[in-house]
Image 1 (cartoon, helix red, strand yellow):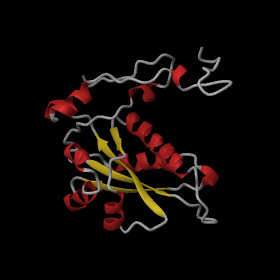
Image 2 (tube, helix red, strand yellow):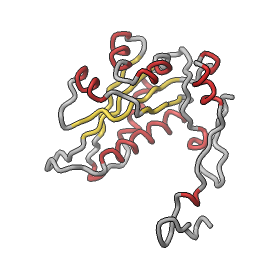
Image 3 (cartoon, rainbow, N blue to C red):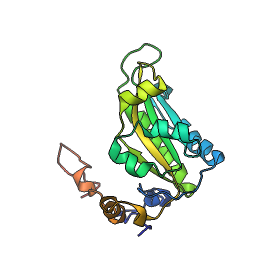
Image 4 (spheres, one colour):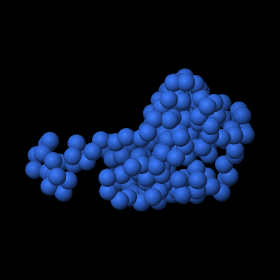
Length: 201
């Protein structure tokens, strides 16, 4: 099963329904033009006070030294499958405002918005993105000399859909499992916490 289009309860844009996070990637390079467009989409994400608190470090597999350097910033379980992706990236966030060095409560939220834009643009181009929280932030700080005000938060594997039969059995099972989401009544509330909103019920 490689068609994992979401079975939605209400109409949504096709690109959102088609986006999903595979573990298997094809041995096919991603063009620099496509990557520039992905990060351009991230660039135009909204952010609190237009702070744009995100930074990305990118490595392509054809540059083996840089790719291995970035791969080493992932936890071992993610390295097992992400090593096959043609592109890896680290999502780094600045946790304080530049203007006054006060904590930016929206920073991680805004990094997520940038990643969401990137994922939609990738889907529009026939690419797939698998985001990971399973990284080693301190390793990333050391090898990339990330400044103290910023922190590596996520990683992204980017590429074309691959063959799940090449995956270890445990990952193959997850790859083939149909996508599921909580129904809206479990997270869209109205007059109080836990009270389902009238727009849903």
